[in-house]
Length: 283
Image 1 (cartoon, rainbow, N blue to C red):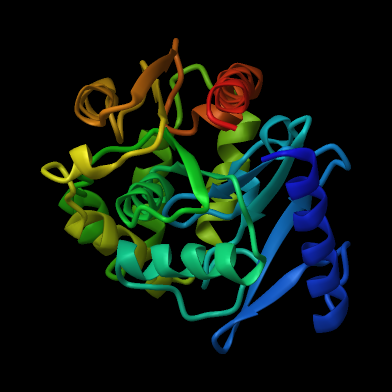
Image 2 (cartoon, rainbow, N blue to C red):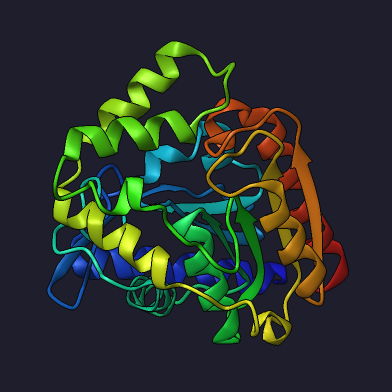
């Protein structure tokens, strides 16, 4: 995106905020009949747009500040419907959530967009990539896979014994050496979910499978995998990198499923390097 395009995008965006009465400290956007919350970071010299999409039962806070505040990048960290500060209901399919991200891009007139997704968010990002939107310049897939089967220990217990499900997910989501206070905070945030929304998320993951469609993703892709990820092991990331035409794989040594929060600087560095290659190569 050239300098003029950047200015045009900024003018459109801020005009939209004013017309619709949004405030910069508490940005919400109405998509359909739902209020969607997003945290934002918009430097004056922004040359790219990064949309951060969290995973099942998550929120924009699943992305660390180091990723939410990148230089020369307008960053929008979403709370998906039914999550965080966004209104209910949630969605019951990955394509349903992808439609929300698609509408977000179009409603804000965003250009030169990179969609980054973690876990279920990575499934959403792949779905966006398969739609081949002209506004999308790249994808970042963190701790995710082309297929996301969910064990019955999680899926079968969410509605039956929510506390047990939260405990199981927490045990699997973090690396063994993750700081205990970080794990405890993550468990607390997960427990704040509506069980029906969390079940919908994991059921959506369980039904997701684009293993035979990855060749249709035609934008550059960064895959980030953690070597200690128990929910989406390294082989998931390797499969993505091997089967998406323009993909590269970065590994986070010792990173669990929540690698972005465990090792924020390493993940932010990998993302920044990838975004810089997009600036110099295509735009």
